[in-house]
Image (cartoon, rainbow, N blue to C red; front, side, top):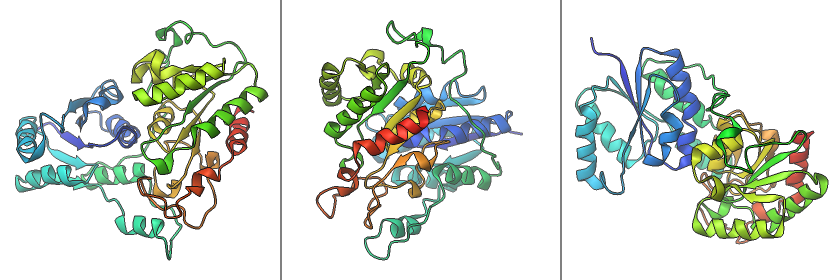
Length: 348
């Protein structure tokens, strides 16, 4: 008989891929004799390559090597050589649909993600909104494996072992945490305007946290060149702030630092999920999106979510729609003290 070997497909942004980690870990732990291969974009490799002994990672560059229909056919031929016995499509978009169709034609065992599209439309509807929680992404992912014959009980604490999380791995200035010194992370950016709190307002959060906790250190997280410049500007005005992403230069080191934070402030974005994967409490700021859509970080409490109570919220599942009001009141209506009070509650 063939060794059981599950292919998991998820091509997506970092935050969405990060949300698969607790489920894949639980699957691997509960079925140690089943091989598991995660197929995703190259950036996701650090999340899976040391996750469990029976989990492997396979990267697919869909923008270049496997671009278009010809590229997907080449990718399919590469996949069929791996002797998979089951296919779990955790994405359910055109490219994964095409691969899934080919696997179905060749009589593989295949299951795919239910995105609850009707409930999503009702949740973000401008009229007749149904403000009720949709099953979480974690539950939806687990359902796919149940359909394949691998029911999963979700159990996950941290992506890092105590040895992997040692501060000694970080550069000087980041490798010692003084007793009773609060370490606070802030990730102020998001992919879409509808999810991004004003940096000017976030600077007021920094100022108030510094006033209340004079000995605290604030670590700022953000990727692109434009973000780096904005964070550097903020650092130049606040001596207790550092641009952690610029200094550490890699996801794994950022995860190590995040695991030592007392709290992370983040938008509904990838950093919320990365901090969640190392068991750090997150004060999450929600604008056009809503925790009811099922994308709250692993193990995070909705009590720590900061939201404006507006009848139009949520208006978008992903935060990528233009504000119908034109003023993004869902974000501008959140006061810096709203965020600070949530942080203080965690610190105390």
